[in-house]
Length: 479
Image (tube, rainbow, N blue to C red; front, top):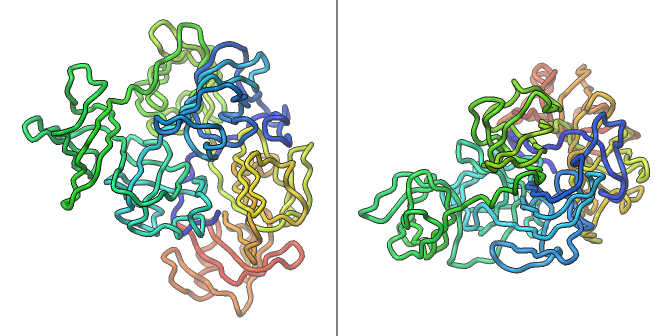
């Protein structure tokens, strides 16, 4: 999905081994250099975003949900109510192969739901109930939003956001859905500026009045600064959220001693490589911990990682593996030349793109297959792919099928720049006298200015496919 402005791509998945059954069409295997999933069977607690269905795929593991208790925002639900990109908590068992499991509970709880207050399209941000939300190429937008990007959202729209919260308080969105307009709202956040006399506190830019609210989960019976809470209520004419209910968030109980853990998210606190937290869950490492995609020195606040290990007696994950998630830097939108479902790859614009167990699959076409995978893709299908080069070829972090958009699109680092041509992700792009050139602010510039600035820069091109080359009708510099 192509977005205007800067895109923070923190959640693009790192290339690890895949399971053919997990994505319904293979990819990766041992050729990706590591083994996906958890190494031994047993009881497991996992958190991460949903990447596909059949039943539910989280962190490269396929969890069967038959018989599982599924809740969405504290309400009973079914697997069919879940969506790709939602951050969920899974409790269940993992098989000995480490890539299959059975869920007993699947829990989804959004980060914020309410009206959009403002939109910054240049920086791909919006504000909902005082919470700043960052969208990126990895954000999944529901079909109810057209186009499926920030361009399809307007001030006043009621939306639901799932995502991960950075230490800055910014919600880094993994999914955005439009919801029916209603007066009630809900939002999570960390309490600050508590005023016990006025019975109010702040959540980021939002003032909350809890004078008449039902309070639950507070050890002292009352909220305190630093408490992580979820608030339900309605916004009055002055913009204050009048709470009907305030719940202290526990983050879910840690597993019992020796049980397995698989947590994916941002590093939310950091003291050292042996004392940090991921998505609020404390983690420690040992001399035996394996690091993939980085080293212990790569750990820092807001770095996206996945940790696997076991809970100790203190409820801390003793990590056997810490995997750093790689960013996507290339986006393709166009028709499929060929597909090799068994081999886990497809060809777009003459370029081979691999998938693996962490690739996010979603079908936005008229067919609308929920349990969508590479096996459902045919030659000629229009797809949108986010990918990065892992040293051997392009590896997809997200693959979406859509109805034909009538043009092809590319975004990535401009290479082999020599007017009137350049390449993106190995795809040749050519320009002519009809090409419109734009700078990072969307202002039209001449060809000379574009080609002078383009080498090594992120660029976006759209146009028509001539052979395996894109004849650009527009070429833009990205921030």
